[in-house]
Length: 367
Image (cartoon, rainbow, N blue to C red; front, side, top):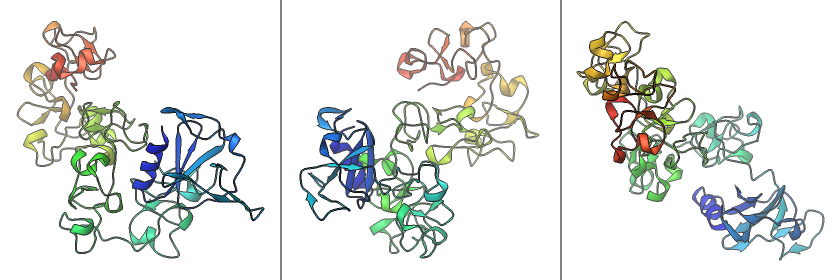
């Protein structure tokens, strides 16, 4: 963390005051809730730049624009022009990572710039419709309260939309691109591509295989990542049904999720790229032709079962996979790792998982 990174993050959400605490924590606000304290209490260097100061223990270094914040004390009429420190104010609450805000959030989180909407309702939930944003319902201390935005019905958003519509809740994708189009993936959602946070979700692409609240940013997406496009219930990116299937509680707000097949079709043979589930009468395996079933013809990796849209067997019990396995096993959900290397060994590091290292996608996950 550096001063510049924190400032940029705050400005992107429309909050002009940036506060840094404990070397690596960034807080954003539109006003100061507490009085100044002695600047010597901000004595910790920034984790990303040892030449800068990033607060102290329970102390914030505050910046607005390119200059330290000038704070007027509550107890005196004097103004601090040299101190850049403040006791941690209530106003600089963390951005909600679970959709809860204010009284419902253990950390009194704010909805401002959250992936769930900018408005915090009286019930303590983030959203962007009138039930969250209307006067008398919206909590001004824990989000941005304004007229509820219209949801895009034509794929246009922001200034490109006649109603200044939001992409949140639209059928075209949750993110508003720099050119005012709704969509998903890094082109529409990436902050580096100038995604518009006022009219949709703007998120970071996972760089470590973690997604959602499990990621360091609290909202990283798997879409467009090198680890797979789907975010599992535990916040890991991947490409198999373990990560992608809705019945496995895949997280659609942080990646691609596929519905359960209702007609026995799966993958490309299904209009919705549906997955096969063992809980249905069709079976839990997706064959090479895109049909759900339970027999070897559907499930065996030797018959080109599709692990992204169902379960494939047999799963390796000895760490061997593909042609190196006597039964042509898949690494899938094995305890050795989900990737099958070029030499036919299951593992989870780049040596096993990278396509550039000739990982075998028919017998496990490749990135």
